[in-house]
Length: 78
Image (cartoon, rainbow, N blue to C red; front, side, top):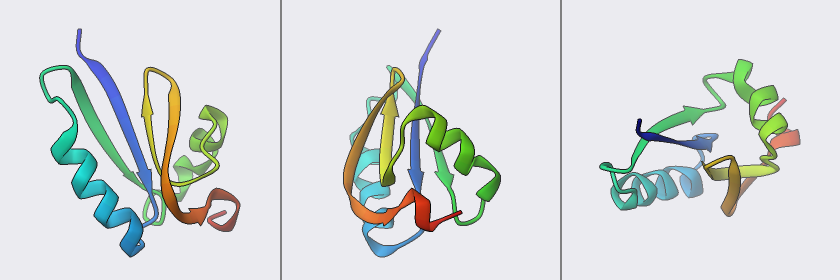
């Protein structure tokens, strides 16, 4: 079974740049990556909060949150 990686972002320039870097860097043999644009998928903000995401962009691997850079606080999104 392949591990799942989640990349949460809000579409800001910092997020888009990080999305490209992360998508290119993740080992696709080890992880299936799901990109979640919270500006377009606001229904998933609660999910992100429950996982522990505080700001975007954020990468979640094995239920551990890695805040990559500061684009926007999750509280600003909804």
